[in-house]
Amino acid sequence: MIPDSLTATYRILDASINRVSEGIRTIEEYSRFEIESVSHSESFKSLRHQLTRLVNTSLSRSMLLAARNTPDDIGTVIQTKAEYNRTTKIQIVAAASSRIQQSLRVIEEYGKTIDAGFAKEVEQLRYQAYHHCASIERLVPVSRRQRLLEQAKLYLLMDVHEDLEMFVASIRSLAAAGVDVFQLRDKDASDRTLYERSVVAAKLAIELDCLFLVNDRADIAAAADSDGVHVGQDELPAKIARQVIGDSRLVGVSTHTVQEIEQAQIDGANYIGCGPVFGGRTKSFSHYVGTAFLEKAATMTTIPAFAIGGIDETNVNQVIDAGFDRIAVTGALRDAEDPAAAAAHLKAILVN
Image: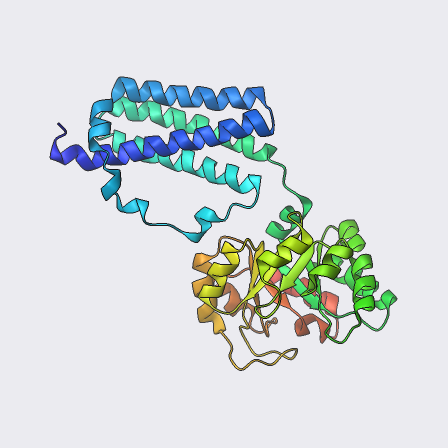
């Protein structure tokens, strides 16, 4: 029997030990079958065996099992959308790494109430886990698109311009000034023009180490070998857009409500746009979400999120104060006397 005063402690230890073991196994299998790394497979196997030895010698397995009460565990019914949003190997490995490290800390802290020596050994195991987890995460291949998206702060929606020369010059100038993502959005351009500009821009994006996406048109995005497509709430659903452009490209989704953010993440969007925040010169809306929506969005997004709608140097700090350091703009650069200077100024605000 477990003393009532220790029941909760043993339940916590039991659940945390299971989480560590599951996390280690997840990465162990990745090391063995995905990257076929003997050294990493052995490292995580050793970590697992050390934990088992510690538990068997310092804790009573019968008490751990006696404390286990899965049917009444409220944690089994508490779920987040992010738990089911694993679209890449790096997300799987990163989640397992976090699970291992966080749970070892829990075991260490609650273990102190039972056996200080046990807690000290778990601490050393935790330091090993930090090293091994960092090592394996560095090996997980991160695509160019994923890398650039994670780093992106300044996103520009642009039109086809008067001619190709101006279009190319604009991308070169603004990329040099700090624009990280370019989206081609021009409702008045023909399909042929959109396609031709997209082919050129997609190649430029590789050269300039930035991203290029097409608005709405998943077919053109795929045909031009662009980095992805951005869809609104009235266009193709994200899941269908993904079927058209494939898993290697990015899908962005415009969101205006908490429910739309949740759905975009469930549907496997790589990033979202949140807005319209303020009134702008490019598009008119009957409703603007304001910074209050951004504050909510900032607490629930598990993927990169860009605030959009009427943002410029006069109000960007309001966006930052709401928890966003990524913005998407049009008029702030298009209508500026010196677009490159305006881009550089906005980028400096976002990164500082």
